[in-house]
Image (cartoon, rainbow, N blue to C red; front, top):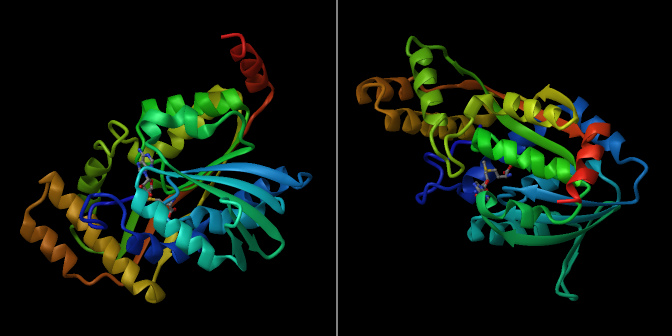
Length: 299
Ligand SMILES: C[S@@+](CC[C@H](N)C(=O)[O-])C[C@H]1O[C@@H](n2cnc3c(N)ncnc32)[C@H](O)[C@@H]1O
C-alpha cells in the first residue's frame, strides 16, 4: 500500500518506512509475472531500464535479478533526500561498486549495473525522464498515488516508445485486519476516501489504479497480464503492522469521516495480522503499438 500519511514529517515517504516494508514487498511480488518478465528479456545481453518513483532503490534490488547481466538503470524520484539514501543503500547492497568514471557501476552476482539518479517530478518531466527508447519502464508501489489522467498520459508515453511496462505492488482495495473488529469496514471505507485525494498527480486512482493501468495499456494494443501480490503480515512483521495501522488511522482521521475516539479505539485493538491486497502488472507492446509508434514519428 502506498500510504505516506504518517511516514514522514514532510508528507513524503521516509527512508525508514521504505526500509521497513522492503522485506514484505519483495516476498509478496507475484512470481508468475516475475517469471514472465524474465522470459521476455531472456535472449538479451543488455537492457535499459527506467524506475519511476524509485525511493531508496527497492525495485532495482528485486527486479535486477530477473534481467540480463548488463543493465543500465535510471532511477527517478522527486525527493532528493531519498535519492541520496538510494545511492548509499545500493552501494551497500552490491558486491562491488565503482564511481571512478563519474558513473556509478555496481556488480551483484553476475550482473553489472550502471546506475544514474534523476531528481524529477513525473507530473512535469515524464517525457524527459523516459528518454528516447528504454527497453523497460518499471515502478514499485507508485501507481495508486497517480491520477487517471496521469496514467492515461503515461501509458501513451510508454506506448510511443514501445517499451515493456512492469509495475508491482499497486494497492487494489483489499484490506483485512486481525483480530477483526466491528469498525473495520467503516475504517476501510474512510481510508479509501483518503486514498482518492490528490497525492501530487491530481485525484488519485487509489484502489482503481490496477484496472486503469490495464485498460490504458490494452487501449494501446499491449498484452496485459496481472497477478496478485498481497502483503500477508503476521507474527514476524510486528513493526510493519504497527506502522501500517498508525498510518491507516492517521489517513482515516484526516477524512473526518469517523470520531477520533472510535479511531483511537480501533488502534488500541493491537493488531497482530493484516492482509493488504496489491496487483502486479506486466504490459508487453503488440502490433498495434508498433503502428502507433511509427505514426507518431511523423508528428
Ligand atoms: C511508496 S513510495 C515507493 C518507493 C519505491 N518505489 C519502493 O518500492 O520502495 C513512492 C515513491 O514515489 C515518489 N514520488 C511520488 N510522487 C512523485 C512524483 N510526482 N515524481 C517523482 N516521484 C514521486 C516518492 O518520493 C516515493 O519515493
